[in-house]
Image 1 (spheres, one colour):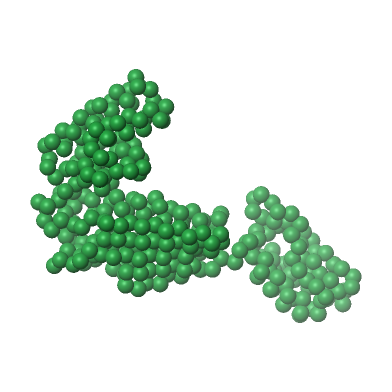
Image 2 (cartoon, rainbow, N blue to C red; image 1 turned 90 degrees about the vertical axis):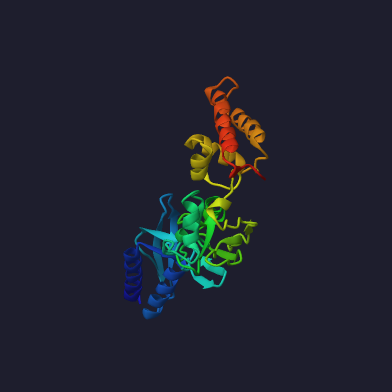
Length: 315
């Protein structure tokens, strides 16, 4: 019996050392097999100390009569048995359940029906994007089953909202397990104009704390049928178009977008008023160069609006 005890503890210790990292459930399962093999009274993993570097000091405890404690060693113990991500695709409804850190990167977006029209519109105003309904970084496909054509603005809002939350919660550090549910509706097809999103609803359920987070992107713009019909609303576009069409420089465009996230601008006067308050709140004085330069930037926007009827500011 004493010989079997030593063999059981040694075999269990060697097995776990070779694994380097393992969750406690799997460790106990394998030790149970060894326990039966040697007819031991008990064989289990004992955690002596939780270290900050993620590796825990442990040993294998075995019993027949008398008790035998194995030699201590370090191993990285996973607290949660993380399942692999599973994504299902159906028309206008995709579901990642579970969505975890155990996933592969998805595919880059391929061309889909309707994209040629978007490319035509982009020759004048570069605002349209092939948008993943389930992000590529979350494992989403890059084909028609997971794509719809959206504006740069909507694409950015999805990245900063549900996608950022999901990536953070399913990181290796947090080890979260989520359900990521996406439903969307496209604008009605008009000839070759198709697959432009009208509404996107994303619902995330955090299976750890049971929190449910709804994200909705409604009343998404319908694409113009011709280049002449393109209207560029400062409240509906992203950074590249702000630079190209409204003459904003890179830092100011980022500041305008930051302020616009609090609510759409009413008109050019509202932009001037809110951006001045924005800089004052950041610690700039009325005499600072940042605030003084604001008047020139507002003048540039005003000039562009006056000279180009396709540019508007509208809530």
